[in-house]
Image (spheres, rainbow, N blue to C red):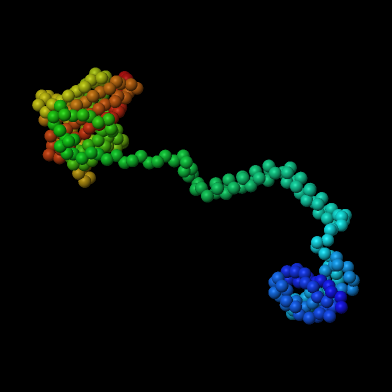
Length: 287
């Protein structure tokens, strides 16, 4: 009886048996599969290893299989393999030549896709400015409403306060040709909420660079009128004296002039305005 080797068809483990064990079931020592031992090979050449058959499957062919551990012999490339290599080289060359065009097209497509997500006439988020915080008028209390000018400190913030119990913030100011300074909420239309100060014909040019202090006991002071809304009705009240006011006029330039104001009215609602603003100077029309 001659011994021979055969391989496990599952894991490739080599096993030893003799010709008398051909067709018997053995267990692979590596994967523990039940293997049917093959017929002994017709040749004693140890370079060829035959393969057993897993129990339940058809017998493996008895053609000798090349030993994977044997030194391979140098073989020439087949014609089909040469053709495949040529096509691969051609593909690499084409990709190298048109690399810039291909990837640029992809980038442009991505950019177009991004643009389609934006709504028409919508400003990109990076150019939008954050909204300005809403201005809030300070409350009318004893710290803000004072008839004594000695303790007054005019803030550098936008002129604001309260008129007849309603919060007021200056949105526009102008000095008319008849010598009236108007400080108002809103920028257009008739005056409905604000203050007018009549200087009896004084021009903006004569007031530029001047500081005016009006104490509560001043005689023949500028006429101050408060304007406010009561429902749909516009109301007003005027004071010729009894109020405290300080006005600091800056230099006139290009029909504008910076002004700082503190005005404290003697009404029961403790109306007042304090802060800064730029006044538009209206010039008389040339004849």
